[in-house]
Image (cartoon, rainbow, N blue to C red; front, side, top):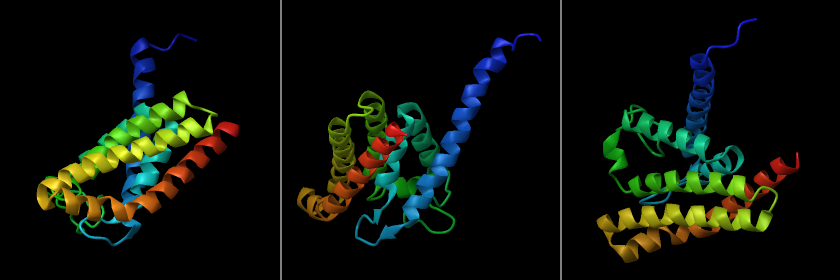
Length: 182
């Protein structure tokens, strides 16, 4: 049997990465629909999803999934929390939740790095999930503050989410630990 040409060998992993990224971007879109209404930013399962994707699948897959998710939203697909049926694209990304979306990209990378670096070490992995969550807050509240001021951004865009996101970080850490044991 002749060897597989080098071009095909390189293309196959990229194709798999693309398929994974698209599938996971759909999971992110679904997690955006599971929400508790808050203003100006809804509470969703997106942060948990970002942490789990990163922690279980690594930074490359997690960042590819986030890139696909943001590209879908920018193109006008209704993938973000609270978007109308036909989406609103870049206008949504420039709104109050835009910084949180950017923070999720950073969080996906950190969670992915931590999942690889701290495999089997629950405490450092858990601390890394909290750091990833803090990055979401920093970007999100920073962007939100340009619209409503720092004090209101802190009170409306961070404080109400702290307990839920601490639980999400713990769940993500537990899922990562379970997978590592399997």
